[in-house]
Image 1 (cartoon, helix red, strand yellow):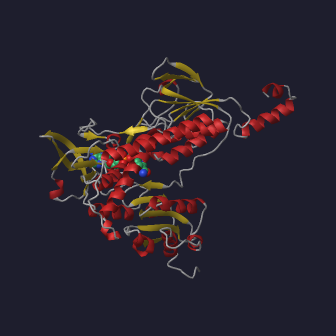
Image 2 (cartoon, helix red, strand yellow; image 1 turned 60 degrees about the vertical axis):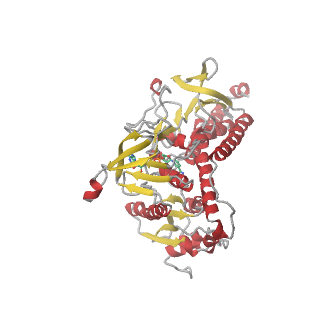
Image 3 (tube, helix red, strand yellow; image 1 turned 45 degrees about the horizontal axis):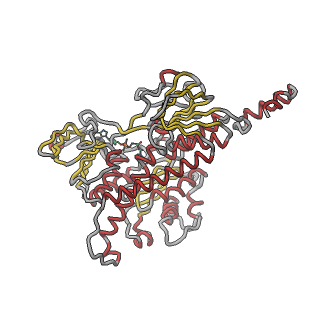
Length: 506
Ligand code: NAI
């Protein structure tokens, strides 16, 4: 093929070259693409690059599937599923079931189920790579210089892997805080908490962000006495989470007997007779504290789980051998095409840090875009409409802007809010806590954001994401027939509310 192309007259060759440069590389056979990291970002990039005709090598120093499959989304959702089931079992009588004995957790069986599900997914991913003729190297990848990566497999000699394009997808790991180094015994990271062999009687969770709140509900449902300490003034203090959702979740935490301490930081700890005594002091962010709140408190727990964010896993990768730039916190800098400062090098996923949204589905999208661009495309990553799914109990989910963000962008905002308790289906399933809010532009009715806290919020957000992506108005959503009785009706009802309750659809 290449031989024949070279023999074409100059004009045809010129045209063909333009086609090659603009067709995302379908004709560019044998371009060598190396990907370091086989999480949801890396394997999505590998498959897309292979589909486009590249010769793809993917290097992974742990297990295929990355944080999401092995130490994040999937294992935590397996635990959350059991926690929700246990919760329902404990309410068996309410559902008309006489349970003979009290339901309780068998953590060994739960861990076995977790391993089995992960193993099935791992096998599936390996089959997918094989199907696409992607070379998988189990080992550590390190950049030697422009165009060459060294792969060091666990059991054999290192080898040089040349690349035309390189995609960095090595992810992140849990951050520590001073004075609380992870030891897997007293001080746990989320990795340790997903692999527990026995439950502590009591647990202090440091950090009321996404991971801290998910674990608080899971552990509490398992019968652990949970305290959660957050340095800011509320839980889930993320810009994308609506204040009302955060307040509803705080109320539900209290109902679940989770002890929530805000405006406080964990300062230090000591162990006495097998128990941990933790000193909590007012946080540096706390404002207008009462005299009582200014005093340190000491709480006694069995274990501490630290969930204060994540750090990039870039040590030893050889980034210094090419000109990839990082910010002051070590997150890799990439542009909207996923290109780094180094020529022919792309970066995707968690290593880009919280500013680019550290979620598996964001990483996969970035992976596909980086692969298409590496093959000659020019796709741009859009972070405007990303669904956010938080698996607390009840769940929290959002897409688009909060009211505060929309106002800050100059919109005249019109919001509509509906409580789950107004839906028949919520009563049927016995989960009536929570609400859905639609934030819209008063002038056009265009949906700007949707914020849900309640049952199946993480599934319900799909409709909202599509509505925002398609530029849908509240009237269009309200006019869409929703099946009855379903939880999805809340989207229709919230749309009516955002129209000022206009059932005649003016
Ligand atoms: P995070 O950044 O969401 O929350 C950490 C919290 O810890 C913050 O609210 C912070 O104010 C607080 N904090 C920090 N230092 C503290 C201290 N010394 N004492 C008390 N509080 C302190 O980080 P998290 O929860 O570890 O999650 C990491 C990343 O993983 C996030 O970007 C998150 O979006 C992502 N993730 C998303 C999931 C989902 O969408 N379902 C699930 C798991 C992780």
